[in-house]
Every structure is written in C-alpha cells, then in structure tokens.
Length: 328
Image 1 (tube, rainbow, N blue to C red):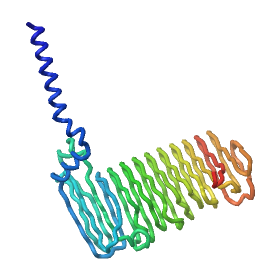
Image 2 (image 1 turned 180 degrees about the vertical axis):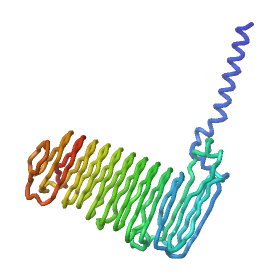
Image 3 (image 1 turned 60 degrees about the horizontal axis):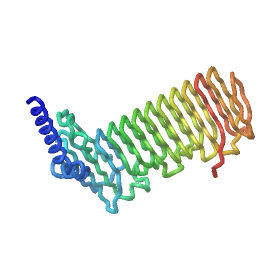
Image 4 (image 1 turned 120 degrees about the horizontal axis):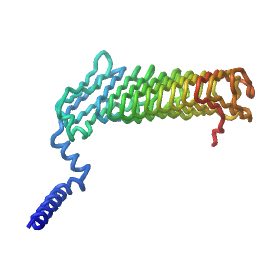
C-alpha cells in the first residue's frame, strides 16, 4: 500500500513539474520579446523636448541603460522608460546647461525580479553638437547601469565618472578627465588636439584609444588601464594593478612612479631618451636604440639621440619601456 501511495505521489509531482514547465515554456522561448511586452504595458514614461540652445551638459545615471544619439533637427529629445514608479528623471535647461538626472526613492519593487529589467534613457541631440564644439563642458556620471553613444564635442572639457557598470563611447574635447571606481570604460578619441588627459582608476578597467595630448596623467590604484595610440608627455603613478600605454607618436617625456604592480610603455622605434632611474625593489627594463637592458639601483643612461627625458622611480613591481614600429 505504501509503495502505491509513493508511486501516485511521485506521478503527481512529476505532472506538477511538467505543468509548470509547459506554462513557463512560452516565456522561456519568447525571452526578450516577453519582457519587452511587460515593459510596454507596465512602464512609466517621461518625454522631454527642448529647442533652446545650451553650452553645457550634465548627465547623471543611477542604474539605467543610457544612450546618446543625434538627430537632424534643432531639438533635444529625452525619453525615460522604467518599470519602477519610484524612479523618475529630471530634465531641464538651467543657466545654459542641459541637465539629465535620474532620481530614485526607496522601493521594495527594486528588490524583486522585475527590478532586473533595465530602465532606459534615450538622449537625442542635434547633429551639430557632435562635432562643432557648440558645448563648453560635459559632465557625465554613471553610478551603475551603462552609457553608450558618442559624447558631444566640447570646447573646454569632458569629464566622466564611473562608479560601477559600463561605458562605451567616443570623446572630442580640449581637456578630458575619466575616473573609474569600478566597472569598465571603453573610450575612443575623435581628435588629437588635447591639452590635458587625466585618467584615474581605483579599480575596474579603462580602455582608451587615440588620446594624444600635450600632457597625459595616468593614476592607477588597482585594476587595469590600457591606452593605445597615445602620445605627448606622460606621467604615471601605479600603486597596484597593470598599466599599458602604446604611443603612436613620439613622446616628449615620461615621469613614472611604480609602488607595486606593472607599468609598460611602448614608443615608436626611433625614440631616443635620457633615462634617470631609481629602483628599490622590482625591476626596470629598457629596450631602446637596439639595446635591451635591466637597470638596478639608481643612475642615468642615454639611448639614441636622448631627445625625451624619462624619469623612473620603482619601489616594487616593474617598469618596462620598449619600442615598436607603427606598421607592426
């Protein structure tokens, strides 16, 4: 009798599981389409349109997926879509600055499953703002979530702060600052006219391409920074982690400090340098003028025409300066 009861119970359990699977199957098969329908039916939407001109941009993203695009009109259009009724966006032009700021109050909704459905911010600017330097400054802050699309061209500065999440974008500015606490930022340059480029990573990862500047400063506490096709005068401060800089144009000088971790700078093949070095522990390797040498202790040594002044201070970890040909 017990066996019969167990068999019947097992059969009922199997039927229950099968029923749940059949019920959930459309959702599993439809996937993204199913969730899109939920967003369309239940989302809160805010829409803004501006025709006034502005000289500054201030974007603050809490957890949304934000995108910057451009249109052929003279209008600014901002659309905000979310399932969380406690979230909203403030959008206005004040004192010549376009402000787009995501706000959120506490909500138990944000703790349940649907909170994982992304909130969206679509920012569409007139095409002229992309390349004509109609803006003086742009300030971008991403607490979490993501930001994509080209940044508008700025006459003075573009500043990006990423606390978590991801940014994929391109920049054109006179001065560029990026600060990453965590997450990942991938930024390419649309110009080679920078006066100052400041790159700082507390953790996470920064990937840059094409930032040739009169002066560049790389500050790495932890994590990873990769900068390709750089150039100009470089200053680096590596506490830990890994810094890699590849210079497509000749450098005018390097001031490198490595407490721990690794700094690796590659320069064009015909680069000459006067290298002053101090090594407490770790290693300094120089591959210039057809020579490959490991330097210890302290001193100064010339390579080629010695046109670039290089100062290296290594407490621990490693510093490498070598060359590559632009065709490689």
